[in-house]
Image (cartoon, rainbow, N blue to C red; front, top):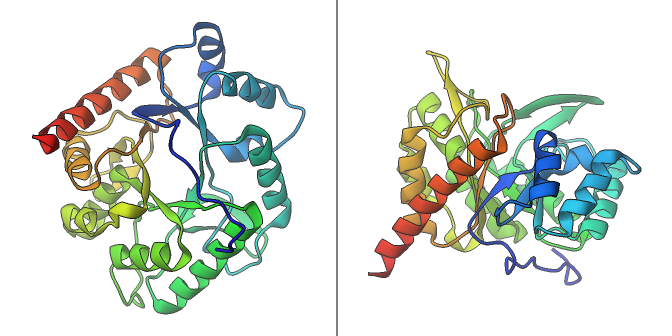
Length: 285
């Protein structure tokens, strides 16, 4: 990252936030519920002059925001999509989010865009490639990037290291931050038969900006990260251990499909906040 790039601040982000979804716009604007912060799916707000963008400006007046995207395709071997990057930078400059995140994967190739988050082989060559890509993004945006670990359903025979070693190498060498998705760790651990706690304990505490929680579906042969269910009991348990390891970092509930009423999401957020506070209190005794 160049000397001109600025580190983000977390001063305005505390506690457990929610993903901002179209279904809840009016209720949030009119009632201004006691939610500490919102995360937006930044790819959905890149078009200017839309009603969705107008709502975003209104909500930004009352709540801190973070950006979370899926379209950067940081793992692709194609050049960065500079039209996408220009739109993202313009939105960032206007809204001033606390930070901006995307996924450690690829989502496009040969001009085709997939809605899936495709995992990467864990090799030194791929580490070099990803570090270079993240540095390009950080230099262009003028701030640190935050990357998220993804859930996966396949492994590569060419991998030379574990996923947690891969993440540590990338975050250290690029000086980026990490969005730790606890649900994704659990899903991948069940799909690939490794110990979720081994992964969790290897995470670089000083790099973690945020934790994500979400729900999965059990397909019998594998777990599928759908963001369409409440957080499962095993993930709540792993989340408690994550707070024990990471400490006081912001947490977010992701619920993107079969979206329930806002009150139900707030219940889920309250549960996360209770577990988080209980674990932090234990750690101070």
